Image (cartoon, rainbow, N blue to C red):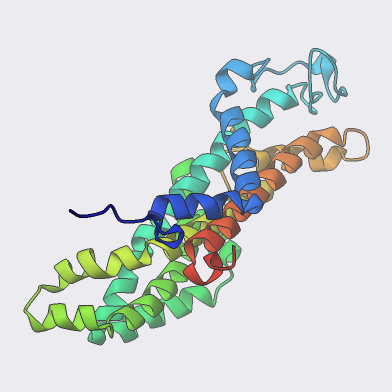
Length: 291
């Protein structure tokens, strides 16, 4: 007769152990809650916006906060609250899209540079050239030769972000390709795409997730900067950068025009960075042992 095995505390399933680390990581929880609140506000814009963000009312221009206009009005009499909640959609779309596209592009190029030895030099020299140009300047240059739209803004921000991911994936690839299980897979004749899919990519998921959060935060800031400089999304589109650009000439008499979109922008970037820091602590085994 066999006796049931005793449950050893340090042999808990992966999910349970990660949940314990999660509870001990307030940075991740606070960042996730803050990001969730901002995301819900922007997603619910059609229902919580009190006015049409494009409605102009010269009789109520530059009014302070009131029961009718929660955040006041801008220089054209448009409701700042409605424009702020609608403008958050632009930042969310740009952040998620750039993080996804930059990660996918960086993974493909990074794997090529890490496992195709003859391609490593050309790929990395191109990436070094892109990184030599400040991201905001490269994005401005790309926007200068294209038509202003949300899709072109996403592409213009994605291009400078790809080299970061490529360098990360390449460095991970150089380490993983020397592991015994990868060499064993090569020895038995396993094709390279299968090795990458089964043995290499799963070991890159954790650092890639963390890197994607920082890329998203950077993308949100760059989008706001481009719009503030007048080379981002069209001026008539509600966005936090456009709102701050329109209100900078009225700071002395109507500071609220740039205050609220600026606070929402800062809260969003802070939340994304907090989530990234928290995920790094949870997903990194060396840091997780300390929690």
